[in-house]
Length: 79
Image (cartoon, rainbow, N blue to C red; front, side, top):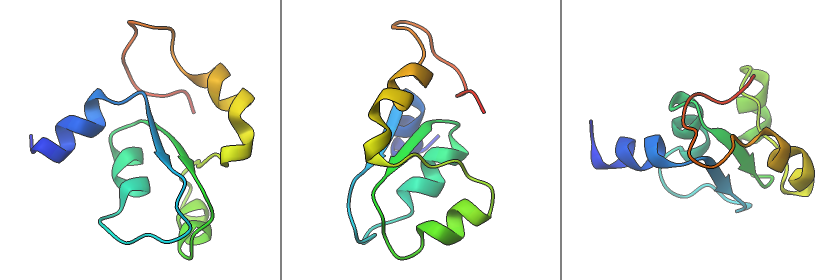
């Protein structure tokens, strides 16, 4: 596993609040790691959602907090 993959695997949530995606594909990479994704609007996000990846808006904080697994519990996010 690459160091980057290790980071995604260790995360509970991938938060990408930027309005411009300038490095890698953090939303897609986080989804591939099975993590909960929160992302601000950026140019390609609609296409990613159309591909079937669930991406929460930063304004959905209460919903995202509910979906996060309890402390100490790791695993794939609920779909």
